[in-house]
Image 1 (tube, one colour):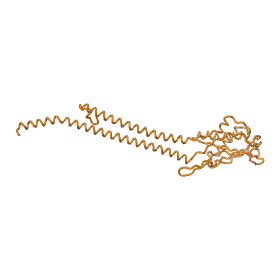
Image 2 (tube, rainbow, N blue to C red):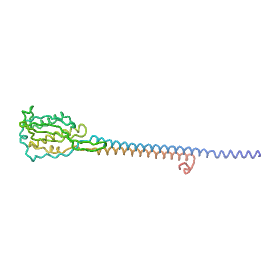
Image 3 (spheres, one colour):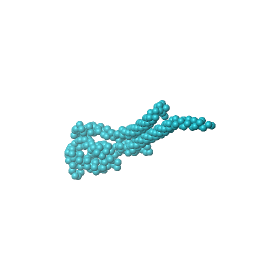
Image 4 (cartoon, rainbow, N blue to C red):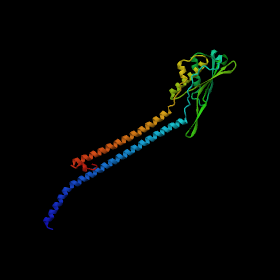
Length: 297
């Protein structure tokens, strides 16, 4: 081959290299940008999947907590609380000794094992309530008394319920007050007044104080002492059970957290994709590459 021809071919090859090199660099940069965008999208998808899994786990945990709360309620069920009718004057004649008495001797006959309040506290509160009423005067011995009040704190089993893993009994605690004639040792009347306890420490104290007041109100009826409207209304007041409401609150909180987590993850994924697309468009614009030819364009 002649030297001039060779020289011409070399010049043409060099010119082609100069022309094609920028295009190769652009394609290499586009490939690198595409790979980065794909990696970012994959990372966003992985983050979204992790957030969705976390949301499902939170929801499952909330359901488990709600079930545990329900199981705990079954394990230690609250005493059955039933409305108590306002005591009217008994149809049968009440022994006249109850209304005519002036002095009483109050005894503590103890409490059942599952009574919800300490028997000493119960006795002291009942003693104070009768003393505050002032209708009867307390004496220090049965011989000095017109009537003997025998206080017994009872908690009879009134219902049985089945649950997971066992059967549980429900009790209805109450004050049982036997009114005895000391001269004949005959029980003239027995007053049974329900004891309601529910809620936290302060609520339980309030409900117990109301139960003590209701016991005195029942004795007032026997002694022909009229009740105030408040005393009559208190006789039909009893705690309500909010277990179902609490379980629904727990479930709702868990589901809400799960949905919020999924929405946040989806929003982050959309933002990452949009950012990658904008970066790719900026790169193509800066290098005079039509957006339609960009990766993902």
